Length: 324
Image 1 (spheres, rainbow, N blue to C red):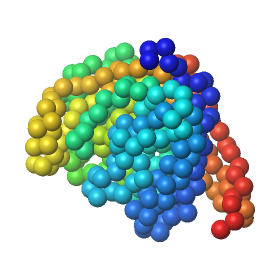
Image 2 (image 1 turned 45 degrees about the horizontal axis):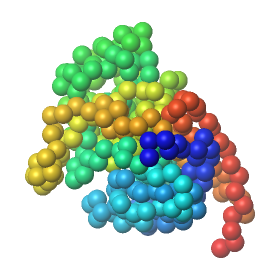
Image 3 (image 1 turned 90 degrees about the horizontal axis):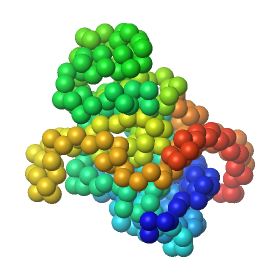
C-alpha cells in the first residue's frame, strides 16, 4: 500500500541480523573456507531476520551464483509476516575472499525498502558501476559510463575542487580492469586496489567524508543493487549498466531482454525513498572494525544508514556469547 511506512527504528532492528552474521562469519577468518563461512553467516542472519516484524522477501541474492550455497535465496520470505511488506537484500559476507584469507575489509550487509522498490538484474551476474559522493552526484551524467576514464576523473575533480592527482579511485583487482587501471593511472589519479568487497567500496566512495573519491569498474550485480541502496541512503550518485563477462551470461541476459547499453541511476535501481542499510564489520577495515572475541564476550562495529533523514549512526555493541 502507498501509505505504508518503515518504522524509524527499523535500522536498529536490522542491525541485529548483520551482527549475528558477522559474529558467525568471523569465526572462520583466515581458515580458507569461504563456503563454510557463507553458510554459517547466512543461517545466523536468516534466524535473526525471522524475528523482525515485517512481511519480508529476499529481492535478489547471490545464492546459486557460481554454486554458492546460502540460506537466503531470492524470493524467500523473511520476518514474522506482520507489518509492512518489504524487499530485503542480504549480503551476509561482502568480501568472502578477504575473510577466507584473513584480510581486512570483510563486512556483513543488509538493506530494507518497501516491496517492489528493487530492480532485478537477474540473470545478469556482473554490473559496471561508478559511485560518487553527494558533492559530485549532480555532475554525474550517463556519458560517464561511455567516456574515457580521464574525462570522468576530470569531472569528479572539478566537482570536488581537487586536482586529478589528489583523487583516490577504488577498483577491484581483476584482469578485466587492467585497461581501466592503466587509464586511471595515466590520468594521474591514484588507485586503491581491493581483492574483494565492492559494497564496502561503494559506501567509502559515497560517504561525504570518506577516503575514496569514486568507485569504478565491474563487480557483482547483486552487490551493485545492495550498494545502490547504501548510495541512495547517503545521497550519493551511482551509474550502472549490465556487463556480462561470459558468452553464457551474455546469452542469458539477451534472452531476458535486458539492455546492456542502458545506463541506470540510483533511482532506477531503487525506486522508492524509504531505505535502511546496515553494515557490520567482520574483519578490520577502512569502513568498520571487525568482530572481536574475548572470553564469553564479543564486540561488533556497525553502520546504520536511513535514507529519509540521511542519518548515519555508528554502533559499537558488546555481546554475551552463548556457551558452545
